[in-house]
Image (tube, rainbow, N blue to C red; front, side):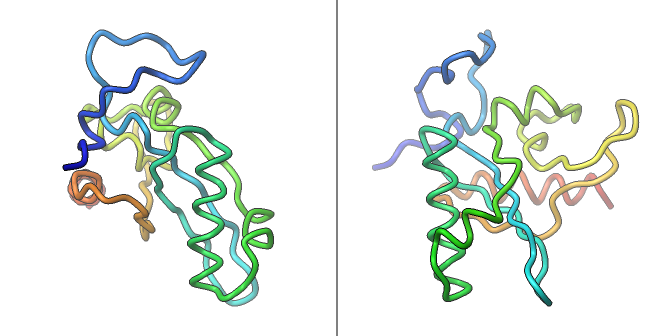
Length: 137
């Protein structure tokens, strides 16, 4: 039985602020992958223990989709951020939804991830995205 990424007991990564309550998705990272040619930008979510591991996992998965080398994909990855970083930057009342925020005007969320690539086993993240989409409409 695997632990839910919502309730994973790991502590915060080094340098992350201490929190009184457990943070949803403690091993989650979000990476943006720049588009090429006629393709579109991708946003991937992956479980990892560090930024480097997240970038490698995303590069390998997208390389399989695009039938190219992972190193070619890794060059296109930008803004790789942990759930801790995303939640600290976000402003939605639902903390789990903050990992999907992509644009703000003052304290108001203006946009969310539209077509995520989920590379996680726990469906709780998908449920949180559905809530974010509901808020955006």
